[in-house]
Amino acid sequence: MQIGKKLKPIKLFSTIQGRIVVLYGLLFLIAFIFINLAVSQLTGSFLTTSRIDSQSQEVESIATHLAAATANGDAEELYAQMLSSSKQIGGRVLVLDTDGIVLMDSYAMLNGRLLQHKEIEDIRNNSRTVSYGFHEVDGEKGSLFDNGKFWAVYYTTPIVYQSRNVGILLVSVSIQDVMDMVTQTQQDFALVSILILLAMIMIGILIARWISKPIAQMTNAIQKMSHGDFSGKVKITGASEIVEMGKTFNRMSERLDNVENQRRDFISNASHELKTPLSSIKILAESLLYQENVPEEMYKEFLTDINAEIDRLNSLLTDLLTLAQADNPAMVMRMTWENLDEIIAECIHSLQPLAQEKNIKINHIWNGVSMRCDRLKMSTALINLISNGIKYTPPEGSVTVEVEEQSQFIIITVSDTGIGIPQEEQAHVFERFYRVDRARARDTGGTGLGLAIVQQVVRLHGGEIMLTSTEKSGSTFTITMPQGRPEA
Image (cartoon, rainbow, N blue to C red):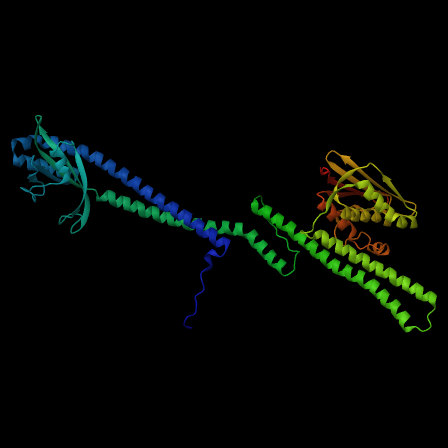
């Protein structure tokens, strides 16, 4: 055995289950201790009071019975009556004079002795008609308590004959049987309490397992999350706070799983989006570099293609930078009072060349609405929405933009007559790098970030964006933002 080796601490309180069982057991133990004390006290009090009330009446009856013999000084008659009374009550009978000196003892042991017990003084002082007290006395030889101690009650009462106090009666009666009964009751109750406590601890263990099981499931799922597995779910039934916590955990797990999948998609998409134009640029550049006597027309064509691929890269990087800036909680919003219709007109003007290529008409319903906003970010969001409508609308179609005031809100709608979005895809269109039709999105130059940027800009302005779409019938994006008030 290694000297100085530390003993491992008992991990009784290291788990919720252990804590519940220990606390549950302690609560029942404390409760049983108090109940045991209360039952013992009540039982002892009841039995003792009943015994004392009964024997007090007997003592008064004995005093009446001995009065004549005591007053007449008939020692023989008195002793005979005392023996009879001693046998009747099951105790020791002593007759004392009014000064406390023993005139006669049924045990014939204390004759002539002066006794000064409190119970005797109570009678001498006329403070009580019957007095009693508890005493631990030595057992008499040959008795049930031979050579042992036992508890006895000393009863005293005046001996009255013809309205004159002629003496004091002292009766000593064992009450050990009551004490033994109380002790036995305590022991029996303690045994029952222990058995009940053990049963309660077993029930507590079952309850603790039932309570801690879902927590253990969530702990295991969280440990899996720490290793990158976000697919774990916990199965919790019933109706309680833990069930609600389990449901919340499952929602969080699902959300994290979606975020992780989006991250993987981002890496894949971003790599592809960056690699495709770079590969094209490399091929075009190598063609010009290693091919001799390249015609000027080919140079222009290849350089034009290289320029287009660079523009594509620039667009992707710009979207990524815009989204990163919008995600930054420390970003400063440059809020000014702006005419939204003017901003929309500028956006439409910049997108007219793209619309004219497909002969798409952009309609602007002008209502002269103004609000406080970050002009640059709002322009970015509107350009993304309008250009998205142009890209996914067939030739000869249209895109309509309208802004209006409703109560304390500004409502901006961008509608198109495009291909629409399937119902099952609509809940995901604002997710980053999500594309309804990936192949078509690449053909149109989409990065999958445009609508995510729009949503983030709208949220920064305290608003929300919703989509309504039907396949082959077009889509409508509705932005709702608080109006605000112009600065004085």
